[in-house]
Image (cartoon, rainbow, N blue to C red):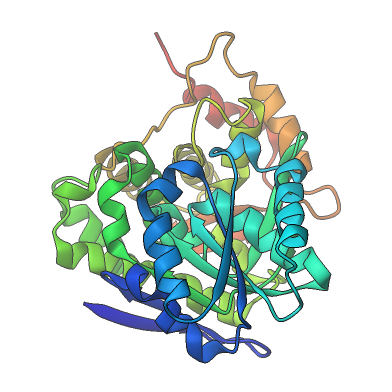
Length: 370
């Protein structure tokens, strides 16, 4: 089963290929793209053990000269220090302006490899081979690259579009259940912000918390519809000057929670799930959304095995710290925090007039109880 989605951009359009078993054909798909001979493959040790040999064989058999660089796994390693290791590998293997960096892994690897590609020799070519659901449906598409700063997530970065995104659904078979659930948060996001039909299909599923409970046709639908949604939004607003901001639904409060817990307590998808619940309730309180719709969203998040409360930490997360952290978000404009708020399932609006007292009130209702 194979499908192709084009991200149509003014300067550099590219394809998203969804192909079962496609990793073994990576070199074949890259050959027509004029990518140069030298390739630097970026991955982490766990992913490389599972898929590294297959990727290297696919590239070398297609005539590419390949080296690899392994970085530690985890959001807390998404730093400039890790990117420095990619630069060191680029020097060691004499990457040129015609060379290509290939990211084999989840969103963290993709973000760092993409940022290195954007900045090495003022920009070299880049290919995304996502191995997590979250990266397949979100992080690998759209050209956002970057690393974290101690004061906030993804504050250092650049837009740098890939030449190709190759998605092999077979890679999901080895994805830990918690990481699969993290990706489902982004899938649910698309249902809320732009695709009511996808939302309804997800609601009809008995279980969404592990891949093995999801029929293959539904998994293909999840991948295709999510990638198409992201491609459509990015194609109309590549640099997030306007509507692309809707892709940040759930991320405003989610990023603050990730940062305040040191990227060790919740993963990205879990944080986004919590952020979506909060944003949904804020929308209800502002009269933008019906409580019934907010309840449906919450139920779907729970069906996916994702949290709907603030994480239980000791000491508990200070809600005032969350509110303060929102001011360091990339989406702050003239000191005002932009919130993406739903108006109905399948549509959202962008608001910058949400009062801190309302944010505090909603978050207080979401505090974990013993």
